Structure formats: C-alpha cells, structure tokens
Length: 302
Image: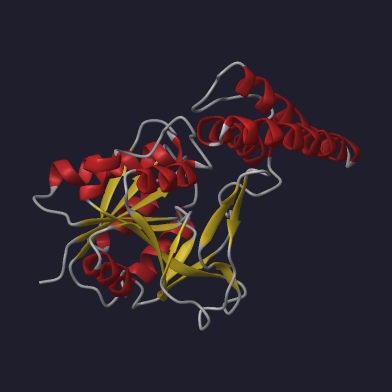
C-alpha cells in the first residue's frame, strides 16, 4: 500500500490560482492522497470552499491571516487531529500546478533513504515551461542570499542540498517530532530557509528530486515590488541571518545589506510617488528588526 500523503495549500485572496492548483492535483496518479486548503481569512471564500468540497478535499477556514508558516502549521495540526494515519505532509504553494506524476518520485526518495528529512521537486516557470525556477538550493552567507540553482531538468540528478524551497516540500511526518513546526515569527518569507537549516541540524538530508516536476507562477500572491514583499523580505532576511549566521559573517552581511538597501530605498523614492510606500516598507523593516518586532505586522503602507 502506498504511504498516505496529506497536501497542505495555504490560500489568501488567491481563489483562482488555488482552484487551478487543485485541478492539477486532482489529476495526479498517486492514489493514497488527501488535500487540505487552509484559508487565511480571504475576503471571498464561498466559491473556493464549494470547489474544494466538490473535489473531495478539505477546507479549513482561519479567522485571521496568519501567514505562510502558521497557515501550514494549522493545516498540519488539523490533519493530525482528524485523520488516523498520515505518513507524509506535502507543503504546496497555491500558485503552482503539478505534473500528474510529480508525487511518486518524492515519496520513493524518502522511502528509499531514512536519513532524508525533506524532498523537493524540480520547479519550472509556469509561463516558460521549459525554464528552471528551482533545481536545488544553497545559502550564500556573506550576502544572505538564498540561491536557486537552475539546471535543466534533464541535467538534474537527485542530490543533497543546503536549502529546499517551501514552494513544494515533502516532509515525513516523523520529522515533526525531530524538528517541530515551521517558525511563525517569519510570517512570510525565509521560513523555508530556516526550516531547511533545522532539518539539517537534526542530522537529516534535504533531497532535490528532478523526476518530480511542478510549475510555479512566481509570487502571484504578493508581487516582488509590493510594500508587503519588501517589508517581510527585508526584515526576515535580517532575522534569519541574525539567528543562523556566525557572528563575524553576520556583521559582514549587515554592512553589505545596509548599503544595498540604502541604494534600494532612494531608487524607489526616485521612481515616483507610487513607489514611496516601498521605501517606507524597507525603512520600517530595519526599524522592526532592530526593535525585535517579528511575526505579522500591519502598517498603512501595506
């Protein structure tokens, strides 16, 4: 019998993307599978909830927007309480669409090697379906950059990595006992980098599996130039590095990162009134890091 896999998809005001994701998930060849959509207090949920339940999936509605990490954690806890046995949790971004055969290679790799603590797919761009978005990952400590390797799928081989994206992440349920849940201090961004490190610190491997294919629409929820993404991206990069980088490396990074964001701050101001909110977001991110403000924050510029 196939191991049981429970997919967690967090949705926030992205019903159409989530429906497209679920449509692709309903066509997969892996049979022992369930899916839970965790809605982070979206404005409109009726259509999505109806679709989810019509497909035989599960819908968990939260009262407030808790972010990516907390949304996934809520879905995992819901599944543990509701279902008798689950062998794997699959964290899947709502702005993805999956290949019908994507799940078997991930499960097989975990089953083959008990020291694998997480498996990740080969991910191509949704709009450029033969171009790699993620083919393994690393962390560049001096710049604080989370690196996506971009080999073609044909070039890729199963490999142990220093980082796996939370966009598609298969976790043996036993890893929760060893590592715990995702860190909710981040709210959005860098929680996958932190979790990758925690898995490796516990003595497990992160395995990239190129036979598993997923397509990603890339930041359909937040947008890379939005105040929201700039605030959490900046603050959480600082938070992540302060926790995991060695002290001498962190101070080098801090100098580099500060200078980089000074340039970025004035560049956005120079682009006009509509981008000033992004500059405010960057400035506030540094202030909140300095004052140890983490988790979800709500500001007018967002």
